[in-house]
Image (cartoon, rainbow, N blue to C red; front, top):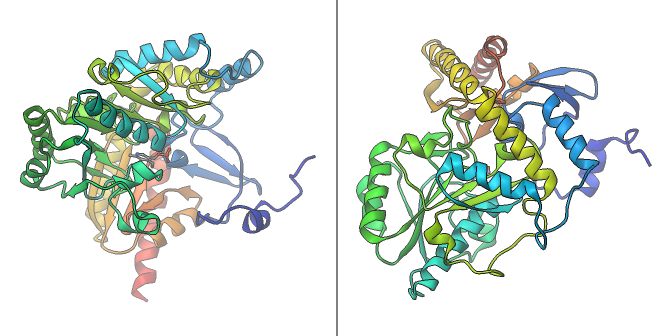
Length: 404
Ligand code: PLP
C-alpha cells in the first residue's frame, strides 16, 4: 500500500505521539545542502537534521554503498562477527586514541553506555560506593533515564523524577567550583566540549584545565560527550582536543552515520578491561548497514577532504556571522567553531527561526535566545553567501515585528 496520497500532517496529529513541535512542512527529497518540500519548494538546510546529515542529503557515494549493503547483508546481531564493525572500531580508535568501541544506535545510548561503564569500572575496582557523577550546567546528554540524569535543564528532567541520585551540576565558567565538585567519590565527570543544546557554549579553557587536573588528582574518569561537536564538526576530529581533554570514555552519534542511526561509546583499555561479556549490549548496535554508512562517512571526512572543507567554510561562515553581529544589535554574542554556531540574541530566537523558514532557510532555536546553525559538512562558500542574507533578513524582520 502506498500512503503518499494521505496528508502526513493530519495523520501525524492523530497517530504520532505529540512530543515534537514540528514546522508545517513536509520534505520529500534532498540533494547536498538543499531539501525539497512536497510542493517542490527548495529550502537551504543549515541544520542537517540537527547535525546528522553530515555529508548532506542524497550523497551519491553513501547512497551507492547503502544500496550495495542492503542487497548484500543488513543485520546479523552481535551474536556473530562481521567485518564492518571491527573495521569501524579500528578506524575510530585511530582517530580518537581510545582503543575500544561499543556500538549502539543513538547519542543518548552512547552516553548511557559511558555512564554504565564508568560505574562498572569502579565496581570492578572494589569501590562500590564510587557511583557519583559531575556534569556542567547547560549540559544536554540525552533523554534516557541515565543520560537525562546528567542533563542540566530542569524542564527535561522534572517530569520524570526521580532520576539517578548523586549527580552534581556545576557552572561551566567556575573552574573553582568544578575542582571542588570532583572528589574521590566521583565515578566520572561528563562534559560536552561545546555545549550544543544548551546554547552552543564552548567550555572555557580554564574549566577544561580544572577538570583535567581534578581527574588526575582523584582518579575520576572523564567522559567527553562529542555527540554534537565531535567527528569533524569543528574542523578537527574532536573538540575536546582543542581544550586539552584526555577522556577515558567518549560518546559519539549524530554525524557518524551521516543519516543512518548509529552511536558509539569509545573507551580506554583501563575501562574496557572492567567490562565483562553480558554486562551491556544492543540488538541493532553496529549492524552492517550502520557500520557501512559510518565507514563511508569517515572515509569522506579523513581521506577525501571533508574535514578541510569544514575548517575552510567554517572560517568563512564565522567571518560572515561576526560581520552580521556588527550590523545587528539584536545579536549579543557569536559562539562556536567550524560548522557549529550559535547567535545569542537579546530576545527569543523562535521568531527568527520562523522568519528564516518562511524565507526557505533552515536553522533552529536552542535554549530560548540562541539561533543555531549546524550545516552539512559539505556546505560551500556560495551556499553561505546565499544563506547569510536570508538569516539577516529574518533577524531584521523578527526584530521589527517585536517592536510593533
Ligand atoms: N549528547 C549530546 C551532546 C547531544 O547534543 C545529543 C542530542 O542532541 C545527545 C547526546 C543525544 O543524542 P540522541 O538524540 O541521538 O539520543
